[in-house]
Amino acid sequence: MYVVSLLDSIDYGATGVDAIIQNVRFILSTEWNSCVLNRSLGWIQDIKDGPIDFVKSQLASRIVEAIETREPRAQVEEVLFDVDPLNGRLIPTVKVVIQEDASIQSA
Image 1 (cartoon, rainbow, N blue to C red):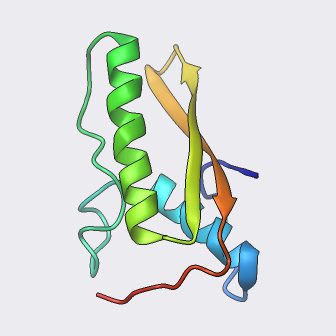
Image 2 (spheres, rainbow, N blue to C red; image 1 turned 90 degrees about the vertical axis):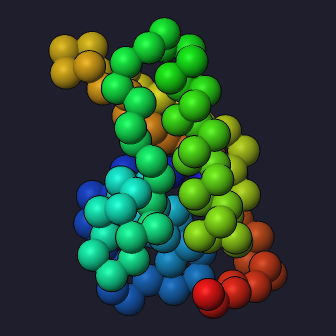
């Protein structure tokens, strides 16, 4: 199992498990509709206010859907959030299991 946080740099030569983890980081770090040539990449981050448990559950389901749709070799086991109360942010981290034998289907 791998613990994956937000993307901090890109390794253009990543292969195997490192490439899969980097893909998950990229999806986790990308807001839906913000990637110029691929508007459906990322996850919808439009919940701005609400009870914290409701917001966490909504965001977690969106993150799982985005990762498992765009990177089928990664199976999300758990979504965790670090809370930044000074800036009012939830910072996601996911635990994933890599399925190296899964195939990638192009759209």
